[in-house]
Image (cartoon, rainbow over all chains, first blue to last red; front, top):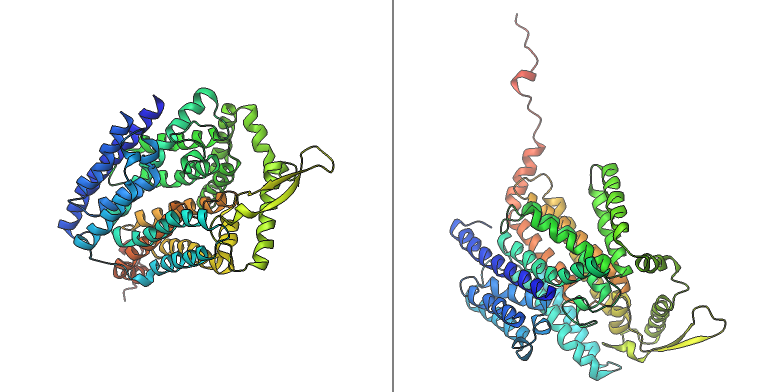
Length: 34
Length: 448
């Protein structure tokens, strides 16, 4: 049970991170920011 | 259910990666640290997850992302030299079969780390990389922390996501070192994250999980790594007395949660001369020094399997225990024994390059408000790398991804500093200008 909750937390977090990162990257590229 | 969740996360990298190729590179790093093929019960264990993600990363980079490339000579060449040397030593390995098995994953770890600076070139890329590492590590730490809170934890107990000695999350000492190294990174995320802004409580909570997990692992190595992190924080703090009080308060609170067994195990740090496990380590280190006298080019991967020696049995007189095939239990002796003096030199230069680049980034960005995040990130990663180098003195993790990833990120950070050099130079010039006093501070002029 605890293990499954940990996996769920880690996976939800990582998917949210890459989703946000892709959006920010698009914004960076359109704004020419490094 | 667990397998399905991991499969969805794994596929997310490939799907979201179609719009931003660096995301697929993040997928490889996540696979390397999360080890979904070992955590899942079904589907992923039957798929070559790393190979697919690695091929997709290289393919996506070559097809869509070859711009703003860092120079090969900024550090990646050292990874290639290191990979070439470990390949050479494997050709004369003492135990060829297991040596080639280790070579297979070790060389991929080295070469992919050398490729990381090409993938992660902006603040967003680097922060995403850090957060993906954090997400993968924290998933392994939560079960340790929760089970420690419930039953007190224990050394080499199967309380993580993967079985004992089946990857970094299943080996107490490596796990504890990773917990300590994660702390400065989490503190950076707390203050500077743009991807997960205003999440101070989330990162502080993760810090607590890492700390409880470290205690629950019962690993003495973790305490050494934690001492390095605490020492570095103390050295760079301006309020040193306040920090000492904080450490004392946290330490006392921590003591209240530890068991007598934990205290007994930690106290053996100072009595290493009497304990069999510690004596075995010292014996294998001495064996390594002897071995490289006759084999200065090293004996290839897994050469420790040929060692035999005797150590005195605890509490007995003239009785010895014969030990065969004792692992190196130290990154330094692992590199020296397996790859000889030239290998130790190449690996040493690689590590020093990482530490040096972080130092240079910190120096170059001092005083720049715009690059405060970069300076603080370099500081956090420098501390994390030092924690791994200190903890690594007692564990054989010279070919696990963490240290190589830290060196690779240091190259990316120094490339970012290079990209901002005009800004930094003009800032430096401005700070050298003579002081101009505001009007109210000017001396009144005498009127005739």
